[in-house]
Each structure stands twice: as structure tokens, then as C-alpha cells.
Amino acid sequence: MKSVIEFGCGDGNQLLFMKYANYLGLDISPTSVQMCARMFGKDSSKSFLLYHPKSFYNQGYLKSDLVVCLDVLYHIIDEEDFEKTLDDIFSCAKKHVILYTKVTDGTES
Image (cartoon, rainbow, N blue to C red):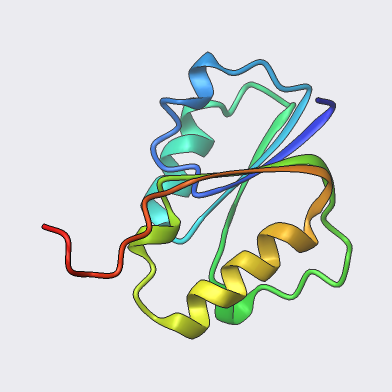
């Protein structure tokens, strides 16, 4: 993959094991974005931005070969934010999307 956008870059530890030519990590946590920016500050192939579904208006500007979202969606409680995040994920993808999440009906413990 030449370009990857990750929704929910977290602390950047998973990124340490990846080999992406160009990477954009998005996260709702300013602390996560700052941690990743410090960790990968000398790597010009990686960028990080703050993400929030209510203030993300892409209009096709951000596109990548692959969009990744791992262990993020089940944290989103607000249904409108959940749907908007899914829309944002798919609107950024040129080719592929990888979603990893656990979705339940709320009755499982």
C-alpha cells in the first residue's frame, strides 16, 4: 500500500510494526496525537491529526489506498457519531478498508 489512513492511531505502538510508504493517523485524543507526533517526529512519511466526527469535513481531499480502523468503533456510544465515523472511514478509501471491532447487542457480558 502506498498510502494509509488510520482512524484511531492510539499510542502508536501498532504502527511500530507496520511498513507504510505514507501514513496519516487520526485520533479523537489530543494526547494520542501528541504522543505519536513525538514518537515518529523524525519520520517524514507519517503525519497525525486530531479527529472528531462532528468537525471532520473531508469532501474527498483525504484519500488513501487503505483505511484502517482497529478496536475503535465499539468505543463510540453516540449513534450519530458512530454512523459519521463509518461514513468518514469509507469516504477516505480509494481501494480497501479494514475494520476490526466487536459489535454486540448489549446483552453480552
